[in-house]
Image 1: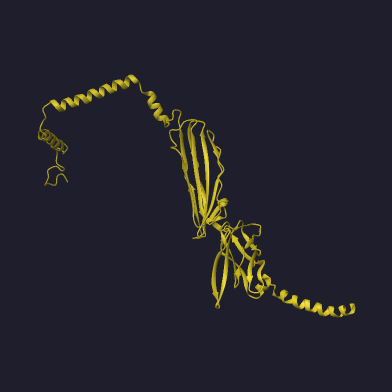
Image 2: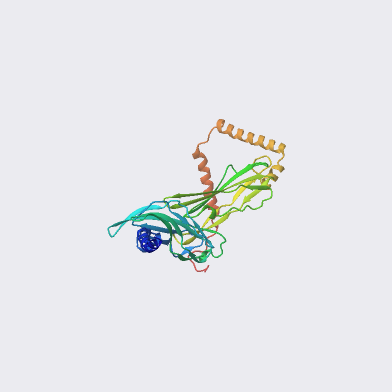
Length: 366
């Protein structure tokens, strides 16, 4: 009996392998589906050339299949020295396309890449963990790897001496104050707001604010407010600085002007954004300070003399008014006539008494 079992064992094992083999052959992996051209993954960088340090480049990961996705896709973002790679959108852009009469489903993922220095960079393959449905094997889960990308970033000659700049299609810098900056007095507070706004950058990449020490005008900066938003694929960044100034001494103060470098990625040229200098006037009584010349002039005025001059001016004005109202008016022609005759007499007196030559008409005077 035992011999019969041993003789039948190879046949049973063969049957067992036969029945298990179809299940093993039906099982599939993403690598197998990729080799059979049922799924593909690609990567591209936009722009790919002429990238300036700090400029945003968009890394596009496309995953396409002629099957269908049955679960969410997750990307594992690599770390690269000198690069900031951020996934700002948590969802892919889904679409479909017809390839040789067959419908393909496409996931488009977008990552933001910001080079922080000049040089050559290599973005390693990005792992995409996903799940798709195969016609025979059901749900297939696994990881696909995108191809690696190599690119260069540089610093234009115009920025060679700049310590910081913003590479963006649009950049704005503005400031405002919560009150008038004249007629201040000691103890007053001034609220200053400075706003940096740019597109296609992160708020953390906008310039920070460094406050200079100014004796007599104490500055208390608050932590900056950073805001990032996305609108139709365009990134918008905003950095808001709040500084409170407390007046400690009277005098004249000036908040210095500041320049900010902007590399316009649309035109490929350097531009300057600036904040103008701001004057602050602080007086003891809260009124505008009077310069030294005006102060001396007022100090030299004798109150008694000022009263006498005012009285004389009033008398003179009253006398002119009395003459105008009560004395008979002389016709204008009677005044102009004597003046005209006197002018003619003066002109005749200016002529020489003798002719220019003696005995005109003879040769004696020649």
